[in-house]
Amino acid sequence: MAAYCYFDIRNIRNEAVMQEYRQKVLRTVDQFDGRYIVIGGPFSVKEGQSSPVFPVMIEFPSMEKAEAWYASPDYSSLKTKRLQAVESEAVFFQGL
Image 1: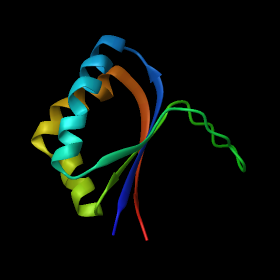
Image 2: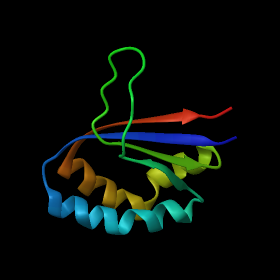
Image 3: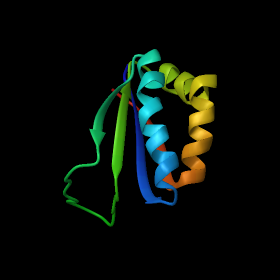
């Protein structure tokens, strides 16, 4: 059952660090059979007060793969850099 990792990049404090992150993160996602399905772009809020700034969604084959990616040594150092460079939100969803 697929899992979806949703990130909203609310504010970038260090663009140079984020550029390094962008250059390296895809390799780590690929290692866990993930694929990006949303990277920014136009969106339209239809209900409620949601106000994404820069939404990103990654699909993994399972929640186990998503959690393994997020906790992996290869992603860990990148995650630390991302968390220092941006204000963001993250939510993982189990698919149907």
